[in-house]
Image 1 (cartoon, helix red, strand yellow):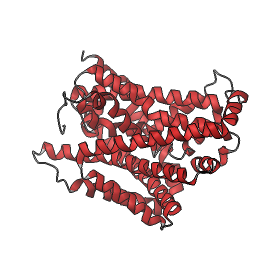
Image 2 (cartoon, rainbow, N blue to C red):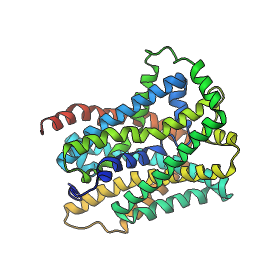
Image 3 (cartoon, rainbow, N blue to C red):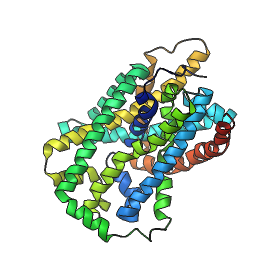
Image 4 (spheres, one colour):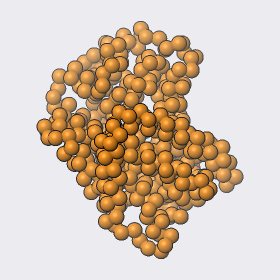
Length: 373
């Protein structure tokens, strides 16, 4: 059921921080890379209400990650197939169906975004930009788990740097507007309304299906404390760039609601073309990060199936599978229409994953963890 054992010699970074960085890499391109998702989910609650909602999402993620990591560690379930055989028994394939559909939706969105960014930066056709992202993702998957971990850590480090420079610059450029909007706009409906809580739970559910893509990091855990601490830290690590991005957006709280790309809107107001390049490159990296993390989970699942037959998975099959899935996603976006694909896909899949993953995990899965003292 697994593709490897726990690495008791792993360092503190691999045990405590790497899972959070991989989770952040898996969630960002489908979550808040452009800022539009933050506007959709959190802006209606206002500046303070949005931050409260993001805190709720962060706590939900941490809770699900903690239980998932420990359940996977106990049963040495380092791929989602092995994990859901523990959690759902014979119904494990329900997650795989939903996960593959989610990948198609996310990859379709990412392909379109890569095409737009490549055209704006380099003036090349959108299709060429989409194919370049597919090629880069497939090439990285050829290197296996260790190489993928190193790439994700480096690219997420660059992303953190760019986002924190972004918010620092925004505070310098229009910090008075940010401060005024936080002071003048109350929490929508009051501090004790459920609107920001509902937004936080919904957003967490919207992204929670990416958590099983992080399970390959569980092999670094040797004891329960490591799994729980890593899970607790992964929620904040996954949300922190989104929080600083949201704070920067509050400088134009009243104007940004109808903006298609809030990141481009804010970058234009910094009047620094070179930083627009740096930021757009960071966004391109997030697209590759998310594709690598999600598709590596598929590869680990296939590798486990090969291992059960006492045969190693051919190395060339890893990029081949990934490229095939991404090309199918681009075709689906063309055939169904990207807007319809997003509208029908995300909403339905959010509730699907809450029902077959989060609810069983925090009931049956938590009991399985607690009984193994």
